[in-house]
Image 1 (cartoon, rainbow, N blue to C red):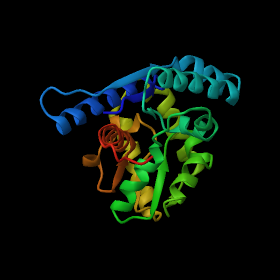
Image 2 (tube, rainbow, N blue to C red):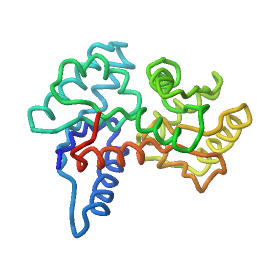
Image 3 (cartoon, rainbow, N blue to C red):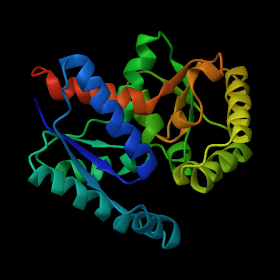
Amino acid sequence: MRMIGMIGGLSWVSTAACYRRVNELTQERLGGVSSARLLLASVNRQDYVDAVIGRGDEDAACGIVLEAARALEAGGAGFVVICCNDVHRFVPRIAPLLSIPFLHIADAAAQAIRAAGLSRVALIGVRKTMEERFYPDRLALHGIETVLPDEGERDYIHASIYDELVKDVFRDETRARYVALIRALYGRGAEGVVLGCTEIPLLVRQADVEVPLFDTTELHCRAAVAAANDPDWRF
Protein backbone atom coordinates (compact mmCIF):
# COMPACT_ATOMS: atom_id res chain seq x y z
CA MET A 1 0.00 0.00 0.00
CA ARG A 2 1.37 3.42 -0.95
CA MET A 3 1.29 6.02 1.79
CA ILE A 4 -1.06 8.90 0.96
CA GLY A 5 0.47 12.33 1.54
CA MET A 6 -2.29 14.80 2.34
CA ILE A 7 -1.92 18.58 2.45
CA GLY A 8 -4.68 19.94 4.66
CA GLY A 9 -5.67 22.95 6.69
CA LEU A 10 -7.07 24.81 3.68
CA SER A 11 -9.56 24.58 5.43
CA TRP A 12 -9.56 22.22 8.40
CA VAL A 13 -13.30 21.72 7.77
CA SER A 14 -12.87 20.02 4.41
CA THR A 15 -9.62 18.35 5.51
CA ALA A 16 -11.51 16.56 8.27
CA ALA A 17 -14.09 15.41 5.70
CA CYS A 18 -11.32 14.20 3.36
CA TYR A 19 -9.54 12.31 6.14
CA ARG A 20 -12.76 10.61 7.21
CA ARG A 21 -13.79 9.68 3.67
CA VAL A 22 -10.39 8.25 2.73
CA ASN A 23 -10.53 5.99 5.75
CA GLU A 24 -14.13 4.96 5.13
CA LEU A 25 -13.26 4.01 1.56
CA THR A 26 -10.13 2.18 2.67
CA GLN A 27 -12.15 0.10 5.12
CA GLU A 28 -14.74 -0.66 2.44
CA ARG A 29 -11.99 -1.78 0.07
CA LEU A 30 -9.82 -3.79 2.48
CA GLY A 31 -12.36 -4.91 5.05
CA GLY A 32 -12.04 -5.47 8.77
CA VAL A 33 -10.91 -2.41 10.66
CA SER A 34 -8.52 -1.28 7.93
CA SER A 35 -7.49 2.36 7.78
CA ALA A 36 -5.39 4.33 5.34
CA ARG A 37 -1.62 4.68 5.53
CA LEU A 38 -1.68 8.43 5.51
CA LEU A 39 0.62 11.31 6.37
CA LEU A 40 -1.05 14.70 6.92
CA ALA A 41 0.74 18.03 6.59
CA SER A 42 -1.74 20.59 7.91
CA VAL A 43 -0.81 24.18 7.14
CA ASN A 44 -2.09 27.28 8.90
CA ARG A 45 -4.85 28.67 6.69
CA GLN A 46 -4.41 32.11 8.22
CA ASP A 47 -0.80 32.26 6.99
CA TYR A 48 -2.00 31.25 3.54
CA VAL A 49 -4.83 33.80 3.48
CA ASP A 50 -2.48 36.54 4.73
CA ALA A 51 -0.19 35.79 1.80
CA VAL A 52 -2.86 35.44 -0.90
CA ILE A 53 -5.44 38.00 0.21
CA GLY A 54 -3.55 40.28 2.56
CA ARG A 55 -0.37 40.76 0.53
CA GLY A 56 -1.24 39.34 -2.88
CA ASP A 57 1.95 37.32 -2.62
CA GLU A 58 1.48 34.19 -4.72
CA ASP A 59 5.13 33.20 -4.28
CA ALA A 60 4.75 33.12 -0.49
CA ALA A 61 1.52 31.12 -0.78
CA CYS A 62 3.21 28.66 -3.12
CA GLY A 63 6.09 28.38 -0.64
CA ILE A 64 3.68 27.34 2.12
CA VAL A 65 2.33 24.54 -0.06
CA LEU A 66 5.80 23.50 -1.22
CA GLU A 67 7.03 23.22 2.37
CA ALA A 68 4.10 20.94 3.20
CA ALA A 69 4.69 18.82 0.10
CA ARG A 70 8.37 18.41 0.92
CA ALA A 71 7.47 17.32 4.46
CA LEU A 72 5.24 14.61 3.00
CA GLU A 73 7.97 13.51 0.61
CA ALA A 74 10.50 13.33 3.44
CA GLY A 75 8.02 11.35 5.54
CA GLY A 76 7.72 8.60 2.94
CA ALA A 77 4.48 9.50 1.17
CA GLY A 78 4.05 7.86 -2.22
CA PHE A 79 2.08 10.75 -3.73
CA VAL A 80 0.48 14.05 -2.74
CA VAL A 81 -3.21 14.91 -2.38
CA ILE A 82 -4.18 18.54 -1.76
CA CYS A 83 -7.51 18.85 0.08
CA CYS A 84 -8.31 22.10 -1.70
CA ASN A 85 -9.17 22.84 -5.32
CA ASP A 86 -7.73 26.31 -5.86
CA VAL A 87 -4.32 25.44 -4.37
CA HIS A 88 -3.86 23.13 -7.37
CA ARG A 89 -2.87 26.23 -9.34
CA PHE A 90 0.57 25.76 -7.75
CA VAL A 91 1.00 22.14 -8.86
CA PRO A 92 2.83 22.99 -12.13
CA ARG A 93 5.37 24.99 -10.11
CA ILE A 94 5.82 22.49 -7.28
CA ALA A 95 5.63 19.13 -9.06
CA PRO A 96 9.04 19.43 -10.79
CA LEU A 97 10.64 20.04 -7.38
CA LEU A 98 9.45 16.73 -5.90
CA SER A 99 10.32 13.10 -6.51
CA ILE A 100 6.73 11.97 -5.85
CA PRO A 101 3.68 12.82 -8.01
CA PHE A 102 0.55 14.84 -7.31
CA LEU A 103 -2.88 13.28 -7.67
CA HIS A 104 -4.67 16.20 -9.34
CA ILE A 105 -8.21 16.87 -8.17
CA ALA A 106 -9.34 18.15 -11.58
CA ASP A 107 -8.26 14.88 -13.20
CA ALA A 108 -10.42 12.95 -10.74
CA ALA A 109 -13.36 15.21 -11.58
CA ALA A 110 -12.73 14.92 -15.33
CA GLN A 111 -12.73 11.14 -15.25
CA ALA A 112 -16.13 11.13 -13.54
CA ILE A 113 -17.52 13.69 -15.97
CA ARG A 114 -16.41 11.63 -18.96
CA ALA A 115 -17.72 8.43 -17.38
CA ALA A 116 -21.12 10.15 -17.10
CA GLY A 117 -21.01 10.91 -20.82
CA LEU A 118 -20.86 14.69 -20.33
CA SER A 119 -18.58 17.23 -21.96
CA ARG A 120 -19.82 20.66 -20.81
CA VAL A 121 -19.93 21.47 -17.10
CA ALA A 122 -20.16 24.53 -14.90
CA LEU A 123 -17.44 25.17 -12.33
CA ILE A 124 -18.08 26.78 -8.94
CA GLY A 125 -15.51 27.50 -6.26
CA VAL A 126 -13.45 30.39 -4.94
CA ARG A 127 -12.64 33.24 -7.29
CA LYS A 128 -9.22 31.96 -8.38
CA THR A 129 -10.66 28.56 -9.29
CA MET A 130 -13.39 30.13 -11.38
CA GLU A 131 -11.44 32.99 -12.95
CA GLU A 132 -7.96 31.62 -13.58
CA ARG A 133 -7.28 29.09 -16.33
CA PHE A 134 -5.59 26.30 -14.35
CA TYR A 135 -8.82 24.37 -13.72
CA PRO A 136 -10.68 24.83 -17.03
CA ASP A 137 -7.47 24.09 -18.91
CA ARG A 138 -7.01 20.85 -16.97
CA LEU A 139 -10.58 19.81 -17.77
CA ALA A 140 -10.01 20.74 -21.41
CA LEU A 141 -7.20 18.17 -21.59
CA HIS A 142 -9.98 15.62 -21.10
CA GLY A 143 -12.21 17.19 -23.75
CA ILE A 144 -14.44 19.01 -21.28
CA GLU A 145 -15.72 22.56 -21.78
CA THR A 146 -16.21 24.78 -18.73
CA VAL A 147 -19.11 27.16 -18.13
CA LEU A 148 -18.56 29.86 -15.51
CA PRO A 149 -21.03 31.74 -13.30
CA ASP A 150 -21.53 35.42 -14.06
CA GLU A 151 -19.70 38.10 -12.08
CA GLY A 152 -22.39 38.58 -9.45
CA GLU A 153 -22.70 34.84 -8.92
CA ARG A 154 -18.92 34.52 -8.61
CA ASP A 155 -18.91 37.27 -5.99
CA TYR A 156 -21.54 35.47 -3.95
CA ILE A 157 -19.95 32.03 -4.20
CA HIS A 158 -16.51 33.32 -3.21
CA ALA A 159 -17.84 35.36 -0.29
CA SER A 160 -19.99 32.53 1.04
CA ILE A 161 -17.02 30.16 1.05
CA TYR A 162 -14.74 32.61 2.87
CA ASP A 163 -17.36 34.00 5.26
CA GLU A 164 -19.24 30.80 6.06
CA LEU A 165 -18.12 27.42 4.74
CA VAL A 166 -14.45 27.46 5.78
CA LYS A 167 -15.64 28.53 9.24
CA ASP A 168 -17.86 25.43 9.47
CA VAL A 169 -21.03 27.47 9.00
CA PHE A 170 -23.66 25.86 6.76
CA ARG A 171 -26.98 27.70 6.50
CA ASP A 172 -30.21 26.62 4.86
CA GLU A 173 -30.47 30.02 3.17
CA THR A 174 -27.05 29.57 1.59
CA ARG A 175 -27.92 26.06 0.44
CA ALA A 176 -31.12 27.31 -1.19
CA ARG A 177 -29.23 30.00 -3.06
CA TYR A 178 -26.64 27.51 -4.29
CA VAL A 179 -29.40 25.20 -5.53
CA ALA A 180 -30.98 28.09 -7.45
CA LEU A 181 -27.58 29.04 -8.89
CA ILE A 182 -26.86 25.45 -9.96
CA ARG A 183 -30.23 25.28 -11.72
CA ALA A 184 -29.51 28.58 -13.46
CA LEU A 185 -26.17 27.28 -14.75
CA TYR A 186 -27.92 24.15 -16.02
CA GLY A 187 -30.43 26.38 -17.78
CA ARG A 188 -27.55 28.13 -19.55
CA GLY A 189 -26.28 24.90 -21.06
CA ALA A 190 -24.13 23.24 -18.43
CA GLU A 191 -24.77 19.49 -18.39
CA GLY A 192 -23.57 19.21 -14.80
CA VAL A 193 -21.79 21.23 -12.13
CA VAL A 194 -18.35 20.65 -10.63
CA LEU A 195 -18.32 21.48 -6.93
CA GLY A 196 -14.84 22.92 -7.26
CA CYS A 197 -14.29 23.75 -3.62
CA THR A 198 -13.98 20.96 -1.07
CA GLU A 199 -16.31 22.78 1.35
CA ILE A 200 -19.22 23.05 -1.10
CA PRO A 201 -20.15 19.31 -0.94
CA LEU A 202 -20.64 19.78 2.80
CA LEU A 203 -23.36 22.32 1.96
CA VAL A 204 -25.00 20.95 -1.20
CA ARG A 205 -25.53 17.27 -1.96
CA GLN A 206 -26.89 15.46 -5.00
CA ALA A 207 -30.19 14.88 -3.21
CA ASP A 208 -30.74 18.65 -3.06
CA VAL A 209 -30.90 19.18 -6.83
CA GLU A 210 -31.72 17.25 -9.98
CA VAL A 211 -28.70 18.60 -11.88
CA PRO A 212 -25.71 16.19 -11.98
CA LEU A 213 -23.12 17.27 -9.39
CA PHE A 214 -19.47 16.31 -9.30
CA ASP A 215 -18.31 16.25 -5.69
CA THR A 216 -14.56 16.86 -5.92
CA THR A 217 -13.97 15.75 -2.33
CA GLU A 218 -15.56 12.36 -2.95
CA LEU A 219 -13.94 11.89 -6.34
CA HIS A 220 -10.48 12.88 -5.10
CA CYS A 221 -10.77 10.59 -2.07
CA ARG A 222 -11.81 7.66 -4.26
CA ALA A 223 -8.87 8.27 -6.57
CA ALA A 224 -6.49 8.52 -3.61
CA VAL A 225 -7.60 5.19 -2.17
CA ALA A 226 -7.31 3.55 -5.58
CA ALA A 227 -3.85 5.02 -6.11
CA ALA A 228 -2.73 3.89 -2.68
CA ASN A 229 -3.86 0.30 -3.15
CA ASP A 230 -3.44 -0.41 -6.87
CA PRO A 231 0.21 -1.20 -7.69
CA ASP A 232 -0.48 -0.58 -11.39
CA TRP A 233 -1.96 2.90 -10.85
CA ARG A 234 -0.57 5.47 -13.26
CA PHE A 235 -0.38 9.11 -12.26
